[in-house]
Image (cartoon, rainbow, N blue to C red):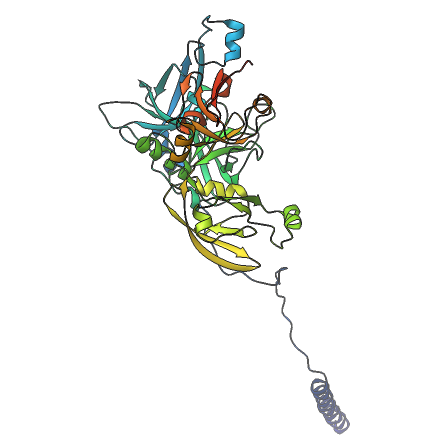
Length: 463
């Protein structure tokens, strides 16, 4: 028994001693080799955490559709004679009446008293225009005016009741990626609504055609018959007039284009108030920059409008702009290409002032420029201007248009050059730029010129 107790005491003592030694050893290890406890964490691959959240734009388009669908109309253009056809048609068909032709498109009611905006190509060469509203009522429409350069036309229908109409939105504040709806009548399917986003802005479809284009590009489905219809935002505001598509097959392939509402509204108001379009002229000539032109002009900028020359006495010249200056923005609108500049100025009138930010020798400067009335137009590859009082006295005529730049090789070979006066076109006197700016050269038959010696020469044109 005593032997067992003795053995037990020795065992307990050995265990306590062993625990003491172990504790001392592990404490030394902790002191010499600190140990941290690791926890699993998720690290973002971009090494930055964005805690700001922007709610996505609503994709419920029902309110916008309901606000606009009754204000978009079907436009039917009926032509029953060949009186408006080019002269070469008459060469083949004589005065024989051609079969009735019917073209269709869309239009947008923009006032309760029945003013409608559509495309010029929808109603050109018309003999009769019929409007069908969304409630299947029909009206005869009158053409108030049109502008072929922007492809905008204004119609008027009358009724004893007020029409539903669409409010204008601000197309300058639209953003790429913004949801939009195209409302129109493709393939005679009345009241069609399609959705998409703004794919690009200030789009020029043909930089060599001499026409200042600045379209809103969208991927909302647009087909034949949509021309003249509405492009609206999710608030149901008009931000564009659907005008064109790019397609190999003739059908929609994902690219549609609309005239910005600020341009359409300005043209609409000009036609109502003045009878024609009032365009403001900045008075600069030049080239939109890219890498190629930057190298050519020996500048570091690859975006902006590079001024090569100015028209003496006009706004840009009087404001102190000079050749080699680079226009970077107008009224806060960034100018990356020519369509940015021409598109914004198309919404302005003569007499208005714009704030120009430009660079000169790398230094940023600002100035205000007063826009002047455009004093020239292109007619049959000739740049023409209205006569000044001095020119009327010099040429002894009280009407006509001055040829300031001759680019028509055929007329040049006939002896017509800069300094000639156009007195008549097809036997009709001309005196204002509007007399020729929208003239269909397919109908051109004769031009009567006057030279500085007082001699008249009539050029007969055969196509």
